[in-house]
Length: 203
Image (cartoon, rainbow, N blue to C red; front, side):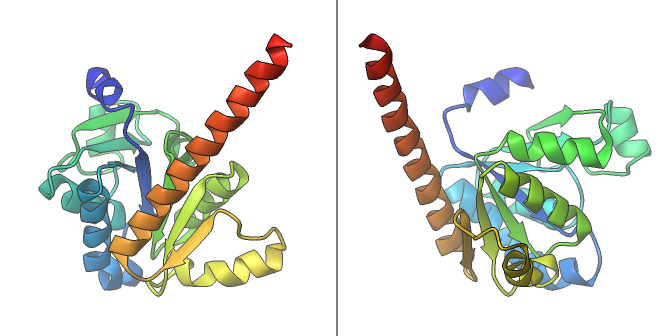
């Protein structure tokens, strides 16, 4: 499992966050699949919470498009993942068993990704959004996909923190494209800052 992760380390990693069940997921099921497929088609690795619903549909889309999927489980072992949490193991090339429950899993999941894309969503999705937002990650919102995703414009207005790294788009293809472009730009800016820092240290 770890060899697979390191082999693909140079590819951008996009986390898909969304409702694990409920009416929100049912309405956004096909959209989740399309987002996952676009992540794979556009050359990135899909990262999920190794769970049901939106993340699982996105994983199916990426897997069937020939992409790689890495899941971060709240469980400590495969047995706990399947028996206690009742989570799937298919459409995933590697599962990282965090052993930290959902809250701890969410932190590792978002921090292991270059960007997070939200489709639909409930309270767990909001938790992953706030972690990513505080960490200044690129965040893509599939607009009009329902649930928490539709509430985020209001939440951002109330929070008065701006939306610099948040990208809204209703189309899976263009949303993934914009997110990848934003990651690349961030990497480029980081490289420029690193070069300037090295020059200062040499003086």
